[in-house]
Length: 53
Image (cartoon, rainbow, N blue to C red):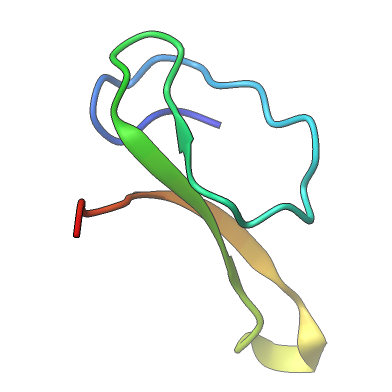
């Protein structure tokens, strides 16, 4: 997947882990998001920038 902040490739090792992590290139805090609202139960995964609280 590509980082939404720097557009460089990020390797995802555990596709079930939803804990935020840092991009190895730009160090932006990212979170893997699973969208299960698709037709026929299909799930789509994407990376989103996690806001600092």
